[in-house]
Amino acid sequence: MAGNDVFFVLMGAIMVLAMHAGFAFLEVGTVRKKNQVNALVKIMVDFAGSTLAYFFIGYTIAYGMDFLSAASVISGDTGEGYAPQGYDLVKFFFLLTFAAAIPAIISGGIAERARFYPQLVATVLLVAFIYPLFEGMVWNGNFGFQDFMEATFGAPFNDFAGSIVVHAMGGWIALAAVIMLGARNGRYRADGRLQAMPPSSIPWLALGAWILSVGWFGFNVMSAQGVEGVTGLVAVNSLMAMVGGILAALVVSKNDPGFVHNGALAGLVAVCAGSNVMHPIGAAVTGAMAGALFVWGFNQCQNKWKIDDVLGVWPLHGMCGLLGGILCGVFGLEALGGMGGVTFMSQLVGSLFGVAVALIGGFAVYGLLKATVGIRLTEEEEFAGADLSIHQISSNPEDGVQLR
Image (cartoon, one colour):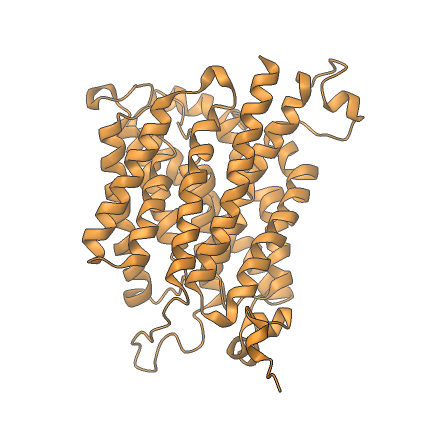
């Protein structure tokens, strides 16, 4: 069975790795054209930084295992504490793709005005220290967290595929980063009214949403981390939540294409926590609630609260992730057709604790960087666009060449 599990988890890792292309194209389609190159480069470089940070520090903090021994040892050939056929290595790869989602989420919120290298430093700090601290508490029981939750609230905190551990963590850290950065220049007029900054490409946005949606079935289903633990319930619950999010966003936004495509993601974010315990009807309701919440949250951020979250990552991942973590304690109950083994209070407390860790970590990391090296482009750089200011090239360089 070891070989089957290695292959199973490896395929999950590859599917979630592909989701990072989804993050990239979702951002490319949402930002203005002068910031498209920066979106692509940020996602790729942040993934590289995340890999090193998680390999050398983060994974050890979360799971107490490192890979600094000889290859024969870490591949499991010698039987010295590592699973056979390199299972622990592909498990690292799989969980790395989750960890790297944190900066990928943040990237969309801080787009168009964040400095490049300070954000890379933030990525390394978050993936090395902040994210694995909470990840280890939930998914490895570190510091007796799950024992405490079960003894106090009647059940461990259930977050099967990361509504809180990944999505809420990324979304609420992003809120801290967005607040520390401030709004884009020109986003709000002198009288406080919103200045329109429309997406550059609905097709690119849609492609990003589709790539994410497809990869999400690796994200959720393969969180079983072994062939024997896999269940079709997770797959169908993910599907139903996605559909619920799409339809709710369609209705609430009055056919807005950006909201419709993000509605699918909102549903998928929310169902991660309870995808292993909900009934499919409960998953559909969870997804619908998340789709509606995203539309409302995005509009409130931009129009009422003056929080310039470019892709709406706080409403999408932060708010909807929190909603999903809590609703796991509702629709996961046997009384509502769920599998049971969860309690509302455990889900509520665990979810809010995750939000607290994210906010404290986010303000600490971005506050430190803002106070020391600065995190925002100059007004001139922002006006020119991150593509030219940081990368010295536009998304379509040939357009600027005059043929004679």
